[in-house]
Image (cartoon, one colour):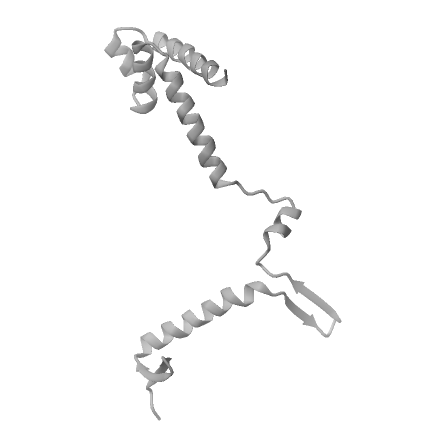
Length: 145
């Protein structure tokens, strides 16, 4: 009895190792699962109790998912909205004084702490926090206008 394993390649039988053969069989089954099994209902028939259990297909159409209340974000709209907000923020930032712009960029772009910025500027952390909130309010008003 031969332990040789073969697979078909371009219409010809090609000898392969046991390891490759097992991998190919597993891959073929995985492909069938994705292409076929997920797309159809499965039925379990209990002849003793005369009951049929339906396991619904796992692949659903977009329309069916929308019907049951699923919502999907529109990545293109998110990208456009983010781009518009970024432009608006840049325009609003350009209207700040140099000191205000420095405080915001240090805190939000460079990730510095209020405490370290307060030490650098020779003011209290409370002053930095209060100024930050004033500037953020100013930016929000400018963007909303």
